[in-house]
Length: 382
Ligand SMILES: *[C@@H]1O[C@H](CO)[C@@H](O)[C@H](O)[C@H]1NC(C)=O
Ligand SMILES: *[C@@H]1O[C@H](CO)[C@@H](O)[C@H](O)[C@H]1NC(C)=O
Ligand SMILES: *[C@@H]1O[C@H](CO)[C@@H](O)[C@H](O)[C@H]1NC(C)=O
Ligand SMILES: *[C@@H]1O[C@H](CO)[C@@H](O)[C@H](O)[C@H]1NC(C)=O
Image (cartoon, rainbow, N blue to C red; front, side, top):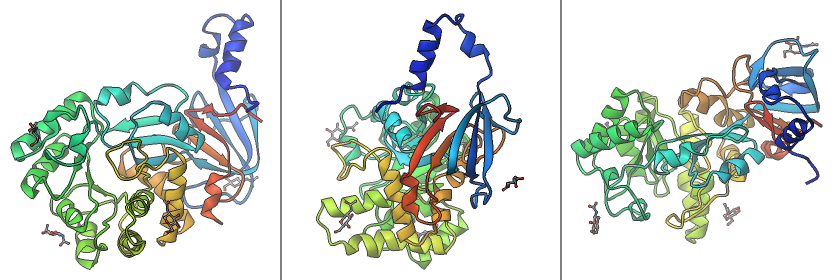
């Protein structure tokens, strides 16, 4: 790489005698010109300019801004990965290189270890902290797994929720497994979380656990069943409850391959579930399940696997436009991250510049020219 990083340039500027704090007090005003801009449903057909000031999108004129030439490219809101495991802060940098500007962690503990990763210039992160589960699941064997995450009855379910909330968790994660928890315990978790204004996200990799998540009114079941496709009975519940799915197809396909199960296990169950849910109008969010854990059967890589997920969602029947929405505006809405997910004045300047149109071929989501997180670019202006 022959690029000098933006922070290296800043360091150089202050070494050259700018008064201390000078760059902080100045308004940092940038403008990306000559780009097709995503409006939530399509790209503008003409070329326009997007301005951001101190990390926020603006509709101010761009005459005194640092000009960045988008060279006829395609400007999208930064991608949101709705399911990943940020066990090391450096994974956020890996994700930024792939245009993933928000990572939604699902189970790393303690919450403070994830919060410590929040730093200017790298991708933003939210976390559930430890997931609730029963003793004996794969998750519970992770060394250091907190004992207060064992949910064995409604009472321990409520205590678990209170402990995560006092720890600062952004939402509540539960790990459903044939071993448990039971419906009454899960319902108590959901009630306690909702009373505190928190969403509940569930690990559900089999049909019965989708049914359990439906019965207990979990907000967001994750993964897709590998034993039986989501059918009309399950769809009726999901739509009536306004539930949202994060199917993590790249994870499900990787599990099938790694365990040498017949490939139809993927197509007839996981992929068909997404086809059916999308057909019935269940909102689908893109999540990779990127992780580095030796305790799970597959480890999708950080950043690149979100693009694999977009391709698998399109194979399952989403249009490329739907797939883009599943990684931008939809997760922002469903996870209540109202400061991102669209290119609108006042929102965070989390942006991805592509050289090729991803609505023509979703694989063009990988034609990344630059990425900005809160207005901080990965590469200096070209
Ligand atoms: C380009 O399109 C946008 C909306 O897509 C519109 O607001 C703007 O006025 C157009 N600019 C020109 C020069 O046509
Ligand atoms: C979990 O189960 C194991 C094996 O049965 C047992 O040794 C351990 O004490 C249990 N942990 C808790 C917190 O109940
Ligand atoms: C649907 O919801 C009902 C009632 O909440 C529940 O009993 C059932 O297990 C759910 N799933 C399916 C597939 O019916
Ligand atoms: C799984 O295997 C199939 C072929 O059997 C291949 O097309 C696919 O790319 C593999 N998926 C992953 C995630 O490795």
